[in-house]
Length: 162
Ligand code: FES
Image 1 (spheres, rainbow, N blue to C red):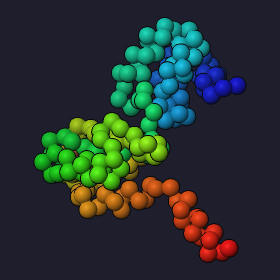
Image 2: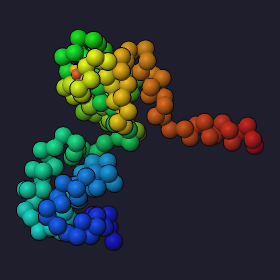
Image 3: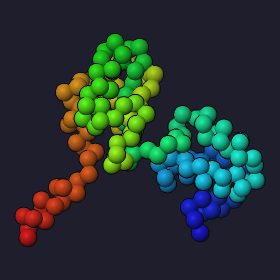
């Protein structure tokens, strides 16, 4: 049984569960592939256009492949004044991506938002739901390092043992 059918079955093919089904599909793929949307439309017997408009209406859904880690930088007024654009620039310098882009190795996706509701500690950067406040360009490198693949560290340990 494929991923889409497993999820549809879990939701008992109810068309009232459309948003929950899309959330589960996005959790599996990190985005909503077009083929999956078609299967959902067929599975719960509603027009593809309805599934597509739900997928495009909510900002939490993405129709483009996303990286393993989602970086969100706030560019609302308060964060903008406190240096939000410099944070975006610095991330771009380190990862080679602009807002809306995903790194070639599919590790990071960079997005911007307008106000996350905690302006007092801006500029704000969020990685996979974890908030970092009063971020400066100098802090970005160490924040991103926490999310890098640790396979290199494992290799070093292995080499030391071997
Ligand atoms: S403007 Fe960034 S949290 Fe409000």
